[in-house]
Image 1 (tube, one colour):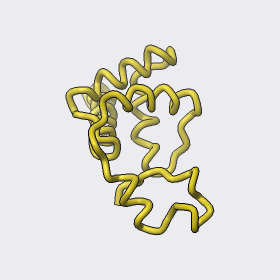
Image 2 (spheres, helix red, strand yellow):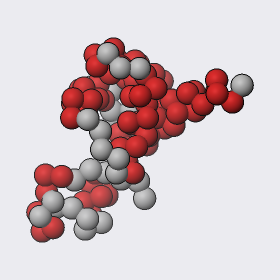
Image 3 (tube, helix red, strand yellow):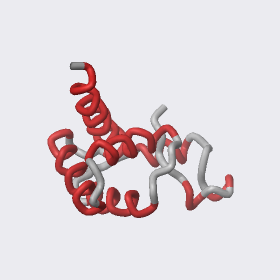
Image 4 (tube, helix red, strand yellow):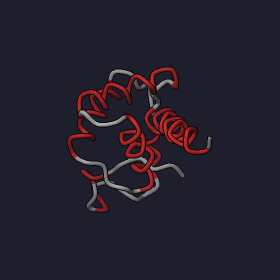
Length: 106
């Protein structure tokens, strides 16, 4: 039974990451994972795992990141996550990391 619920837990966690970091409505989370999975010919569980790992610094494959960005762009609401990250002093022109800023929770 535990093995059957583990994939759902990863997917649910990915929905939460998409909602909190990228402002994607929870109801759209499944569609985002499904479309990215279909376009990359990759299992949804793999995509969900990549989404979950991204905010904590695990790299995501370039192509997966591009497809994910495309899916998120049309669904995301206004977000201040990136702005809060920039305000924290961890990125921006003065740090030399202007093009590499990503919002991280916390």
